[in-house]
Length: 111
Length: 114
Image (cartoon, rainbow over all chains, first blue to last red; front, side, top):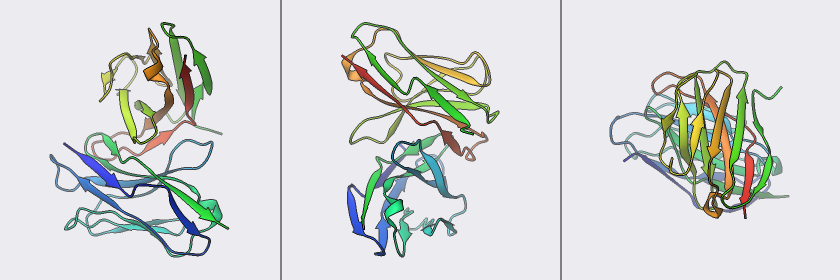
């Protein structure tokens, strides 16, 4: 079935360091599902961070980027320089008639 | 203003009791969803709805019922709560369309079943 696998957390980085959270997906009934990154800040619900609906394209938001790679079936989340306010839980997800979420990766940014 | 709200935000229930979790959205979205999230798991879909009067089973519907009396409201009902249903529950609404369903989430409800 469809599934999403992402970096197991927590991931701890220092402020201004670079970040990558890996995400790979498996979609059995559709070749190119829509891909998403959602984020949940402490005390809040999930919110969409970015989405890409076309293979080969890159999405970006709030300094984060993710490129839809259909060859490696990956959608890794990257940021060149993290801030303490980026501390949150990040979820990779795919949409194949309904959304499948990864388990989430907790990011802790140290000052 | 928050477009998806949930109530209560926190709930303590007793085993065998009935629990109703409520969700309201002002996005005018057709689709609504209930998920639960447990440590070590991603969000798991319990029930969803395509519009008023419709409810569909998700991946883990056992022990839960859902009700969609209107476009705005979607409730999750635990008729006989069990400790295994202790979790954080998220409601979401979606703007619909095949493969185009960005979801908008509520803040979550923490449920503890003793």
